[in-house]
Amino acid sequence: MIPGSPKALARAVEAFATLPGIGPKSALRLALAILERGEEGARALAQAITGLVEEVRFCRRCGGFSEGELCAICTNPHRDAALVCVVEQPVDVLVMERAQAFSGTYHVLHGRLDPLGGVDASKLRLAELDARVARGVRELILATSATVDGEATAHFLARRYAPSGVRITRLARGVPEGGELEYLDEFTLRRALSERVAWTSDETAAS
Image (cartoon, rainbow, N blue to C red; front, top):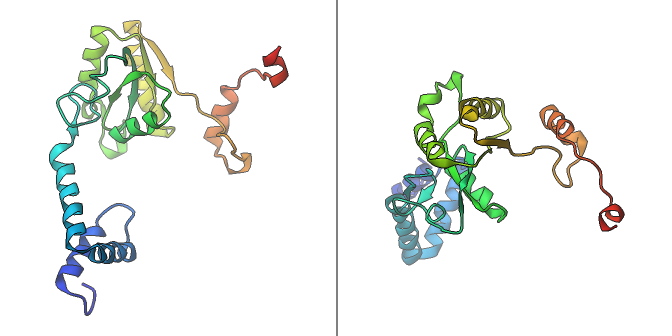
């Protein structure tokens, strides 16, 4: 408890400090900002938080965020249901959608293989993915993270679904636009080299 502070303020600071990335100082600033907004602003924020936990659920089909049994992506008739991008967490779907470059659907594993952390295949949403593949999937895009566990998960999925005949692809990884080589890790550099493409100049492309 902060010396000299009201109990309600101390409770709010302690609550905010439990959030990821929020330290004591940031928690205090958040609590003071809410006080400055007054009762109406505080009630609006409280209602938004309550609505978040009461109304947001996981899509029965893909496992992404949803307000109903199925999410807006799974129920969109313009999305290609036979093209499935496999990601680790629901937030990854939001990140992918920001690019506005994917017209397929998603499947969220809700984790990745992590033997040291006690996460094996039984902890992932594989039964649901098995069912989707059995119903007919043209391509699985493996978009797990570029970590040791993420790569292990991608390899596991590739081996699991290769016998089904579905096309299996992996998101390309390499040097980011505007990236400096001196700041890249060895894994990214190896990936960039192994997935290098033929150089095409603007003049060649225009001819």
